[in-house]
Image (cartoon, rainbow, N blue to C red; front, side):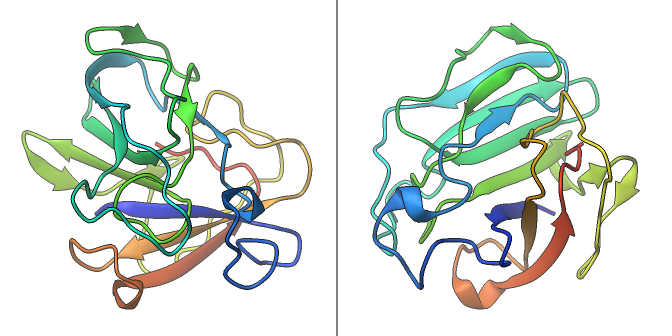
Length: 186
C-alpha cells in the first residue's frame, strides 16, 4: 500500500496558517529525500513545475518522480520538487544518498511525499524499521536516524503519514497516521 507523508510543525499542523497559498509555508516543502536503500535508478521525471497549493496537475498524476530498483522491491517516490532531482536512470545510488527534495508537482493539493513499493509488478506494503503499517499505526524514534528516506534535523519535529485507500489523491480517500521524529522509511 502506498503512503503519503507530510511533515507537522510543533503545533501539529502541516503548514503555517489554514490552506496557505505559498508552498514555503508547508513544513515538508523542500525537505531532502534520501535513498531508502542501495539500488539503481530505473525511471525519473524531473521536468514538471511545482503547482500552487490547491491546484493539482491532473494530466500528470505522479508529477516529478523517481523509481528506484532495490534488492527487495522497486520504490516509487512522487511529487518531487521542480529542479531538485539529482539522479538519472541507470545511476547506482547508496542508502542515504540525497535524491531530491519534496515538492508539489503532479495531482496533489499540497506538498507531500508519495511513496510506494512493488515486487514483481505487484504493490507491497512498506515497513518502518521492520514493522508493517496498518491504519492508525504510530511509529516513534527517540534518536535521529541517518541514511533514511526522510532525514530530519535534530529538532523535535513530526511527520504524518496519510495512508491511501485506493488509487486517488482526493482528500476523502486518506486516513491520517502520525508519528514523532525521525523514522526510517524502509
